[in-house]
Image 1 (cartoon, rainbow, N blue to C red):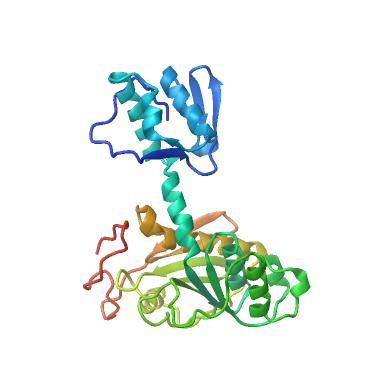
Image 2 (cartoon, rainbow, N blue to C red; image 1 turned 135 degrees about the horizontal axis):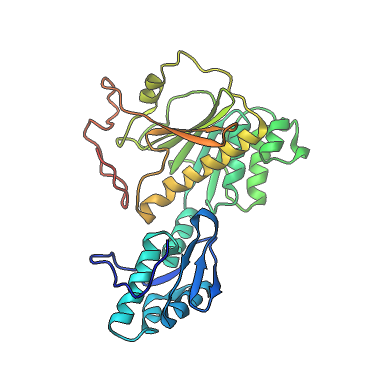
Length: 325
């Protein structure tokens, strides 16, 4: 994308937040006196023919968060300021700029959340290990069985070989500063089901399925009770009479755990950030290690299921998400 800042702001463009910052993990570099590149690779964008005010604004954003009003004040009132607002709006809608205050709200919210992980395999271990560095306040691992070589590849120290998985995971979480232990009477914000097929948790608790199938990793469906198909619908749609071996190579287990952690965060952060629901909502995401592809398979409510899916009355969607029913 090449944007010439002499263009006026698109009519009806959404308002900008009070502060702006470059989106996480992006940088801005000068490639010429009036040219800046944000990001690299397929996501990178070159901005050329920039005005002095636009160059100054981008350079300030490269240094950290900045008040939007201060950025706009660097351009003279009138067409130049409108053009700068248009440029910032284009970058905002393209996901190259972010709201630092929203990121702070997400961090605070994560610190108050409780995620429960159930399972009996290295896949569950990979999910718990991945959650340790996400800022989630409390993780309750209900992971059975002894630690084996695959668990070490999934994130547990080799010194834990032979220990009970739940004990080793509790130690891993405590070392990372994550609260652990049973949730008591407080229901989890989300339950990850990373073991043999089982019913979802009681009540209106959101839950995410993570498993292995034919050597592939499968993440989803994410079940939002009353707002999409349930696990019974997913099982009926699969048309499989029983589970096959839940095994895969260690690198597939690690990739599956990483994708699952991303979907957990999308489910927890989504109501604060808005936008589309997580990709695993009402869908399975299957990782094919041979082709490096992720295939999404949509799931639908079965007509005879009373779960309150897409054709039944449902509770309002989480604030910030638009879920068509």
